[in-house]
Amino acid sequence: MSDHKHDDCGCGHDHSHDHDHEHEDFVLTLTDEDGKEVEMALVETFNCDDNVYALLLERNNPEADGVILRIEEEDEEMVLYNIEDEAEWERVQQAYEELVAAHEHN
Image (tube, rainbow, N blue to C red; front, side, top):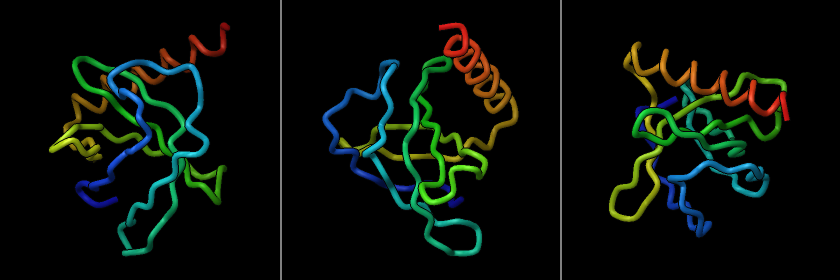
């Protein structure tokens, strides 16, 4: 995926908190490494350290691997960034695994 995407959320949600509901209607288009546009559905947002992250799944291929991107707000727009720092990725992966485990126990 490219370094970052500018997508105005416009959904009225405060993305700085945890959600128990799915964002089945929130779809955005990302460009992959080959320049192909891919529709991604926002499945979950979660916190790790002082950042918020989004789990996105390919809309037309739910069997494909998900993508986790960091969410930042710039000029009142939601901006998604790849996680390029290995230490940050390890913390995010651990936080996501804990989130999945908590959902399985409910």
